Structure formats: C-alpha cells, structure tokens
Picture 1 (cartoon, rainbow, N blue to C red):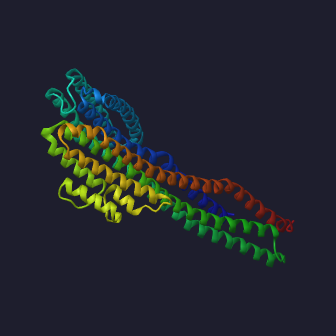
Picture 2 (tube, rainbow, N blue to C red):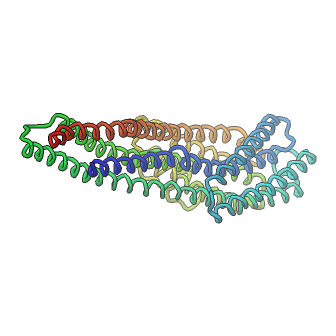
Length: 433
C-alpha cells in the first residue's frame, strides 16, 4: 500500500506540473508575452500614422488617406492601452518590470500630447503634400524622438524580459515532468515488485495458487505505471513543441511585424523631414537587416541582394523572418513562408521606386503603391503567424486532453487498487480467527 501510495503520489505531482506548465505557456504568460510584442507594434504604428497625416497635409486628393491614418492612429492608441495593462499584469511583483511599465505609460501620455499638438498645427497650416511648416516639424521631431529613443526601446525590453517568464516556466516544468517520468517508473517497478512478492507470499503461506483480486490490483498498477510514463513523455514533447513551433515562432513573427511597422514609419519620416533624411534611411536599413539579413553596404545594395536572394535560395537568410523561414517545418507552412518572402521583396522594391522618384511623385508613391505593398507583406506575416498560433493551440489542447484523461482516472485507479488489495488479503486474515 505504501509503494502504491508513492506511485500514485508521484503521478499526481508530475501531472500537476504538466497542468501548471500548460496553463502558464498556453493561457497565462504565453499570450501576455505576445501582447507585449503587440505593444511595440501599436506604439510604432501610432508614430507612423502621425507621420502619414503630416505628410499628406491639406492635399485634397489624398484626403481619404488622411482620414484613414487618423482612424488607424486612434485604433493603435486603444491597442497600446490594452497591451500596457497586460504587460502590467505580467510584471506581477517584479519592481524593475513594474517601473518599466509605468515609464511606458507616462511616456505614452507625453507622446500623445505632442502628437495632438503637431496634428493641430498641421491642420491649421493646411500645407500641400510633403514636408510641413517648420513649427509643425519641430513638434513632431520631439514626439518621434520620444517614441523612437525612449518608448520603443522600453517596449522591446518588456518583450524580452517577459519572454524569460515563459522560458523559465518551460524549463522548470519540463525538468519536473522528466523527473516525474523517471520517478513514476521507479515507483511503479517497486509497487509491482511488492504486489508480486505479496502474491508469492500468500501462495506459499496459505497454499493458494493465485489471488484473483491481487492479480487485478497488479494489472491496474502495471497499466497505470506504463500509461503514466508514456503520457508524461508525451507531455514533455507537447511542452517542447508548443514553445518551439508555437510560442517562439508567434513571438518572433510579432516582433518582425512590429519592426516592419517602424520601418514603414521611417519611410514617411524620410519624406517628412529632409534634414534628417539620411538618418532615417540608415535607420530603415538597420531595421530591414534585422528583419531579413543579407550582406550589403547601403540600402540600394541591400534591396538588390534581397531580390536576388528571395528569387534564389531563401536558406541564406538570417534575421527575424529569415531564421523563421529557414527553421519552420509546420505542414502547409511552405507556401506561407514563400508568400512572406515574396511580399517582403516587393515591399523593398516599392521602397526603392519611391526613393528614386521626385519629391512630389515620392509622396504619391508612399501613399499608393508602397502602402499597398506594405499591407500585403503585413498580411502575409499575419497568415504565417496564424499557422504557428494554430499549431500552438493544437499542442496545448492535445496536452490538456491527455493529462485530463490521466487526471480523471487517477483517483479511480487509486481507490480500485486499494480495494482489490484489501479484498485479496482479507480472506487470508480471516483464517486467523
């Protein structure tokens, strides 16, 4: 009975570790970490939309673009607010992370005030499409510097820090499950040894060939030992697959999408502020290299290399999207990866066309073909992320289903084994009366 109690206690503890790990990765910290990446995207897109509004100015032909940019800006403000709340929940009692979340919240309030002032001055100026008057530009410079130099780095750090919560939970739960698997095997072997010994003892002591009740108890203990070891091994694989093929990929693609939005804003800022055009072009190149790396000395060379590489061998890429494209092995992901790479190539070629056009034509290109190309690239990224999110949800669901079945039958197995042992031993004890 003691050996069986150790067996079922070990199974109970290991199963609880699995349930906790699935809850943390699948329903608690995992989705919240992705939300912190969404915070980076929302903040960068807010600044990009403000730049679009200022770039359009009072141009009546582009009036729909201005209204759409303002609408997206308001939507991103709401998204950023929700993401900050989720980040605060994830920070828990960690004082450093809570200070970072508070700093992001304070900075966001300052940015919104500066952005509102720039938009008001721009509306009053009513300038044609292109760079706004200097008073507008000076206010926007203050706002975008606050966003790019303070808010976005803090948001990115939140994503990295929050990711450690999931990594730590994954490592701890995986080790606990592996240890539980080994201990279950040892405890099961000990329990089966005790039951076999009891069967032999009764056969010799009381001259019985076998005891049916003890045979049933032995079968239950053996079945649950094998089932427990097998299920725990599967659950360790589920935790690994959910993190590697699901969570890690979703987070990487969310970061790539956020950096892409910031790149798109740099295109507007390049047109908006000619004095800082070289800086914004270099910043755009640095972010492009982080998304999809290929050796190049300047932006034109990079865009040519991207086209040659995408049309040739995609495995040569590094960067957020490049690594994801090289390592992904999900069924049906091949076309989605190819679409992301192709849309990214088209986006870079549209950027090249915009930069080679004249000032007036470049604004039209930015709000026309380039906007369309970025939307197609962003949609392709979302499609690939949804594939990985689906794989993540399936792994978590399968893991919860398996451990739920084991958890549901565990009390029944414990009770039935104890009853069978008592039923098998009691008739022998009664012979002593």
